[in-house]
Image (cartoon, rainbow, N blue to C red; front, side, top):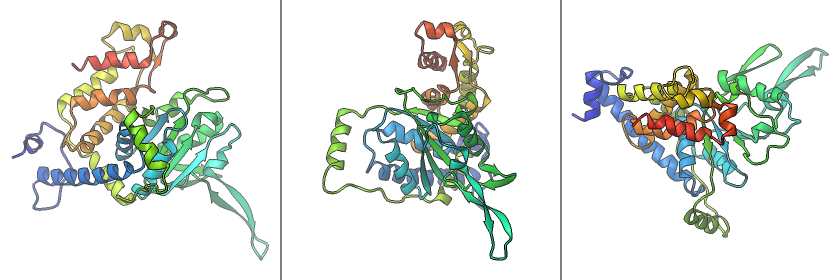
Length: 350
């Protein structure tokens, strides 16, 4: 019997949902996870046809989507962030739209508005015209350039998957994911995202320059007479099913304890580290632990494993925690960064 099956049957991991009649619970779950791993591998291969040298970014984006969350991409222009969203829409079979955020963008420009219609008989009524947010994959380009009023309009949609216009609730399509971008260099004329909205993003991913080999491959592939195009490898319904399966992936007690310890160690009130008490103004809340748990499950499936490990916790701690912590004024004055604090936290995992 495979070790994972033994763990499931012995109760050392969380209990999965009941499978079809006549199939052992652990065996049925293993089959579903292995099938999803193969499906995700084909998705990665198709994205790799057009995205070069950003494997960590691609993987963390897929982890976010499999976990059912939203993603914040931070990087300078020209690193393929828009291209990645377009490729994801094609490969995953999702209806995707892009909104360029600017200071004069209004909430109605995103969620839609009501217009007054008059029928041939002279009757007047309001009709709702949906905005670009009514899609399955929304790219919010340079989200921090929009005013706080417009950012708050996006907040309800990200958390509740619905919008309210004129007192009427309009549900958003399913699945619904926001992939937002920020330029970390040019900050003039921007509005920093409030902590409440930052907390809605499952991961914050840093997009860096590609290495030499990847950039050489990109030049040859994108400046010739023919350019590759990704093909669909998944459907929206399959993605929803995958998100449900991710929540059934078993998590061992040691991984659960690692998640709790690293999140609670990042809070000045509960940390065992004296440095964190002095350096951190406020730390990650319970949503960070939830995000880390889901992301670890998704990463395990992405790598073809049947349950997450402590290595997953350490690898995903930076993108989960970096936007959910703030340094004290003294720490910033000393040149300390959030990344250094997170490195101290991951060191607790051994």
